[in-house]
Amino acid sequence: MRELVCTICGKKAVGCQVFGCCGSYVCHEHADKPLQELKPGEKLDLGGRYYLRLKEESDEEAERSKSSEERE
Image (cartoon, rainbow, N blue to C red; front, side, top):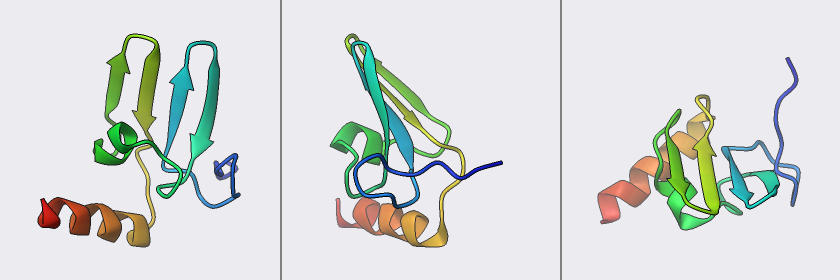
């Protein structure tokens, strides 16, 4: 299975963001805040915007997510 990568920078993707008919895979850095806040495997439907957090993430991304939760 091939690894999904960010369409902006080529890093490992953490999820997919869809706006109307256009979508892209993005890394944590390029993900919108609603996608960053989702747990792995979660989905969020905001009408014309749809976010899907991939189930797998690297240790670095998991640590970054954990750190941002602790700051809040």
